[in-house]
Length: 268
Ligand SMILES: [Zn+2]
Image (cartoon, rainbow, N blue to C red; front, side, top):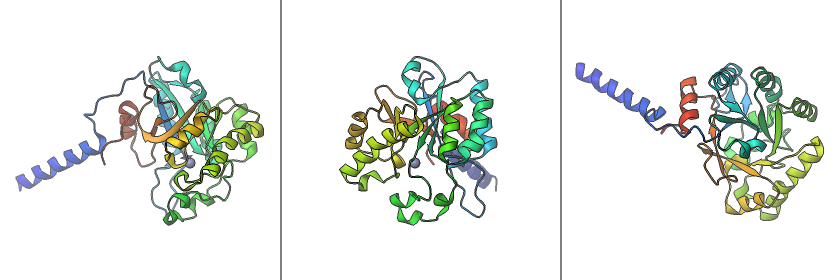
């Protein structure tokens, strides 16, 4: 009996270790952390738990943690100015969900924080998740409320947010012809700048999926940086393939802290 209990405890320790990789070394604190968020909302009822939804309580806890532990919040356009500083964090949001205005904006204001929003231009009633995988056709994403132009103008006026490009329709780049890709990437910058009378200098690859050709298009389109969904901290000479740390709605606060310090999400 004792042997069985000992084996179970050992297995739990191994599972815990694989999940959190607590022994993994901390990444250099001089390397900027770019946090990736989508929605700040409670989990949808009767739906599978989604990593894309971080609850307002958890988001506040995370902002408070950064603030109280000496982290400096920056927008993506400021990345190069903070290269040699310790504890720098850029909060980013992808796509343009309404709760970025209703939930995130007041909390960012409360903690003197700022953020970059990678906004899809054609975002209303557009279920882009099926472009990557037709089986994702749940309708959940299309029905999710998105930001209107008025919300975005207010967010920019507050100086808390800046905009980044995230294409026009959120295409799945590997299946998009080169001319369409160029249009999506280059035009999204022009449209955002003209619509909101603002400067757009950073880009996020849709679904975080891209190849060398896409990197070249972005480099030649006047963007100064581009983020991916690859997990990690900002490495040298990676301005157009920047790694981010996923803030997942499935994570505990402990897992969040490990991700921030290690730039690594564990093995399982
Ligand atoms: Zn996206």
